[in-house]
Length: 411
Image 1 (cartoon, rainbow, N blue to C red):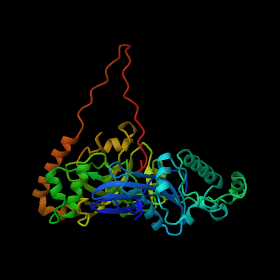
Image 2 (cartoon, helix red, strand yellow; image 1 turned 180 degrees about the vertical axis):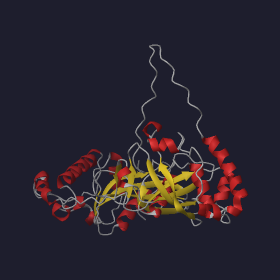
Image 3 (tube, helix red, strand yellow; image 1 turned 180 degrees about the horizontal axis):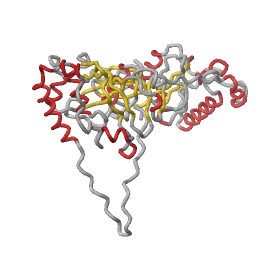
Image 4 (spheres, helix red, strand yellow; image 1 turned 90 degrees about the vertical axis):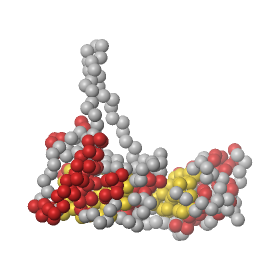
């Protein structure tokens, strides 16, 4: 059995997951990520971009994590890419010395679809012929340096100087039109991961309790002004669940507390109030520093260990909330008036008459829950910040400048 078929993998249970790789590079191609999990651990991933028509693939990075290397996992990921797009051209790009050594031992499923192995006339509408010629030259140099064959028998041999033939096909490139979502045209779905106090965790997962009250408890714990900023907002709820699961798999540290994946569904935001954003085909990343007033129309939550037990509640009427500003100094006057610096409501919001009638017979239960939430919220609020100390020159010391946040789950 070839090395890339995974003969050396133990019986821990291998699963492959094809999901979004949300990276904004300014083009029309869509980022995808193929993840290999061994049991509940990520063993490696393959990042690539797909042309809008699905007939061309640009490989970016193949990465097998320490502890899973030299066990055939890289070959499994690459084989799966070929299987997922059975008719697409594939450009593997230029290889590092490590990548060239791996490629030398890898058995490519269909060399005919590798653009390095075919003349530009067949694929020049998708890839820049000059760039491909440069990548082939670099790969040839690495192969020569490390005395690798590199499957040279498959590589296309030019009938004339490579740069001359490549230049002849530059005009054949057909740039794809970028498809960008309009964040004000449909509901938005964004996910976050929460670690709740044990009693609140048990309460929100108790199906015998009213779903709307449990959703209100979650929103109160998060803070109405604390909707996640460092996330992508998607056109579908399923994409938001995938974001939360992706963060769970690629987290830096494992928590001993059970996590909760929570998805906020927002009504379409006011277009005039939108901050700066980067839009992909089906998601948007709000990159502006300001807050954004929104209305939460629905909440859904579940444990990643039991995704089949998903809880949800429609909030009628929708609840006023806000995506948090990057820092307090960027908060709008309306945000400052409604929320404190920690993102919690400054004063309780009265339930509408319909809500009062609906929960009138549960006043004691709701009051007990409110007391527990207040205790939890109080424990999470930041302590009062010390006033700046004067420097020897008499000037006050300024707080450090905010650092830019990373961009994208491949962020």
